[in-house]
Image (cartoon, rainbow, N blue to C red; front, side):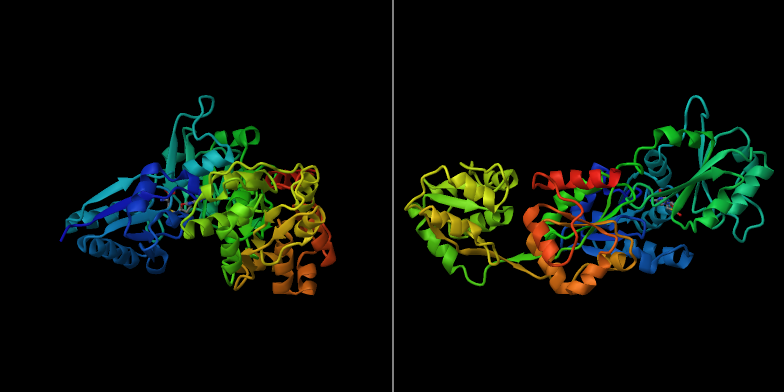
Length: 506
Ligand code: SAH
């Protein structure tokens, strides 16, 4: 049998964007991924769907016997000829026990490669705005474990050197032993007024920073109930944070925002909000599925040449329509002389992806805008195809028929309730830690109300800013007893994100 290989991949400190390209490549090849508590689980999405995923947190920890078990697992999978990724938080060779894993692999004759990662000290320093070295302050930096000496009489750390000389010191795993380490630094000669920063969950939207001095940081950490995982940065460079801070003072930093869009659509909006600093909880309230029957749409597609216009009022309508066209062995050419109207630029862009340049995009991105934009066009006696969701507003067919058109409205997809709501989002609402909830269509509001009950929803959203994409969705919110706090002038996700930003900066 072919021998396998084990890639020890540094996952970086949390922000999935900090994985290396080589690390991603290894994940894409993996047949087995053994991952740690501190490695961002999102990175597992890079691995093939059928790759075996093993959480080492369950078998691992700090204990030696657990580490032995991980070593055995890696050796076993490697000898079985598998391509294994050992995904470790930060860098595998910085307090990561990567050395021990490599030794075990070498002994067993299993080939391995090591892909470095951004270690927590570097991630924390960058995202807290603390240069670890700086010509005006220090020329050296040390990474030190806060756990050493437990059960040992002799310290392996040269506290004299660490304390004198003024180099920057970063302690890993040092929150529970913070007071002892700070006392030692003072005993060994570091000025008690030296600035210190604790950085927890560095580089993630949950990053927390507490600053103080060697003399008072332990008290401050205690008062704040500060918990691991965090690094402790000691040195005069910490003072630069005040001016260089950039990550945790963005407009939506510290804000928790719920996105209720369907899972396969939430991504773009979530990353808009995340880029503004928000911590986003996706709580899909809609699932999009095929219609119960394709008969209506198939009939329309089979007589496409008889239609003068195709009206598309969402990216979903675009996707479901063109996928059905494809399933029937057709493509954009089937639209021939049929003109296409899209409700807004996003929908038009989606259609562009299927080879269609839209002929008409109203200035007002909603059904009323579609109707208005047809008022100057002669559609009397013309056939219009409007593939849509099962629960859609009637305004477009009604109004276009008033203009003399004949409108066919086959169901192209259905909006259904998901099986359950995201437990994290519900938990956050119950804990009253949510700042804002976003609704990007009437269905998102309807469905959430249906799943939670109107009274409970209204109660849960007390003190939570409600952001709605536009007047129709806002109307639905109000009907259901919700007050709308944020609504953009233009009904797009970008504008909605900006309106949320303005709301919270005000
Ligand atoms: N190999 C890892 C370190 C593992 S030891 C690396 O290179 O980063 C575990 C310690 O790392 C934690 O106790 C904490 O001190 C630090 N750590 C890991 N991820 C962190 C994060 N996102 N923010 C702050 N500290 C982190």
